[in-house]
Every structure is written in structure tokens, then in C-alpha cells.
Length: 70
Image 1: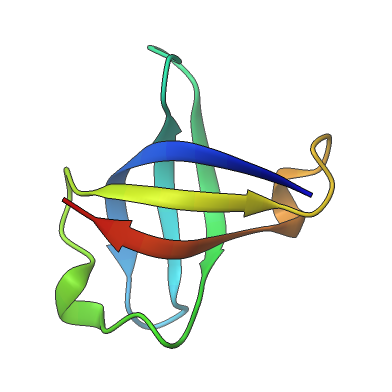
Image 2 (image 1 turned 60 degrees about the horizontal axis):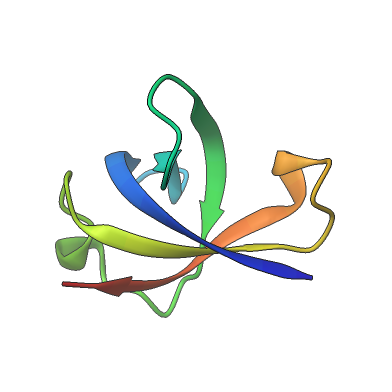
């Protein structure tokens, strides 16, 4: 398991997924990343910093946005 910092680019409240840009990565965006349901949708504002947990570092589909911070 690995923790990474990222910036939220967009959030889909219907599917509770996000598009994020990992810290230090200027061009790579990860799409359809699951968002923990305990994070209120109103907190998921583009530009906010988020913490992404990777259960398998080689499979972004197994990642989850676990926290939002400022």
C-alpha cells in the first residue's frame, strides 16, 4: 500500500469518482479513481489537495481518494 499526494481536477458525484493529478506529475492524470464515501461531495472542489491510497501501485483502478485537505 502506498500513499500519494494529488490535486483534484474533477469529481463525479453520481459515480463518486474523481480525476486527479499526482504531485510532481505535470501531464499525467488518473481518471475514474474511487472516492471514499465518508468524504462529503461539497468538499470535492477542483484544485483541492487530496490523498490517494494505492493498494497496488501498478493498477490505478485499485486506488481510492481517502482524504481532502487544504
